[in-house]
Image 1 (cartoon, rainbow, N blue to C red):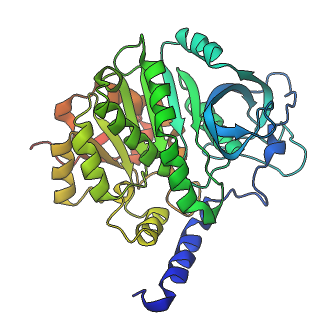
Image 2 (image 1 turned 120 degrees about the horizontal axis):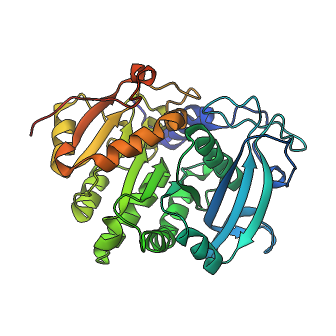
Length: 370
């Protein structure tokens, strides 16, 4: 048992041990130099990513962003080249001068005004928004978005919503405040994107603390009476770092969504275990055990799809980033979610072996009746 005067240091140590695997495997983390524009080799795979961020620009003009909280959203567009030896779920990076042969690199970039961003989005039918989690700096979140886009070959237009995470293990509390700060800005983005689009044509994928930000934004939209926005969203939360009791009150306001909100869980998630202790709170939503009858019943009542992805390969030892390994399966996941009805809520298990069959995303239901 942790207690006494050693409680806080012990909790910090627990958090550090659990979250160290979340750091990039390379010797150093990606700095702003990773955003230097480098011409890729002819024929090299490239992906385009739009960015909406509440971070401040480093010098007011560049497309590099820091941890400051911007008074207004900033907009940019990047073309990212993928290294020839890229392995699924990995963001390859070598320290030093960016090398497109070995690393994800920026092939082109431009700053956008809000008006130009809106015009560009008006020409797109399907868009996908990724909201990153705790301990991500800007360039790491950008390349993670590029990795998932490259692995999934998503048909829609990818948009990164990057909030001002400190990008540091010791920044957990500051990150929670920065995520909360960004609610209004994410709500404005979703209002803009859903205008003129139909049901399910805006997909929101959020990871970890980004799940907290997203659910808070959905709650805010419901309180504002923006049912027109909520009805057009497909929402997928991967390992959301949200206290179970808090989530219960959030979902009571949000209500059932159509298609149902999907939550990807892993009961062995080490990072969420640490978050549970560091917050002295109850279970985190992203670590719920779908085998628990009470969990399954609660999911049905709330109109939510809980999907256990513990069978998916881990890109690291934290069991917190399994979502990055599912890139090739996202189109099927989104299609499954968009076809779902309110009656298809409940707790499910992802069948990892299903990757080898014609329908790669097969959900094996643990509960089919209320």
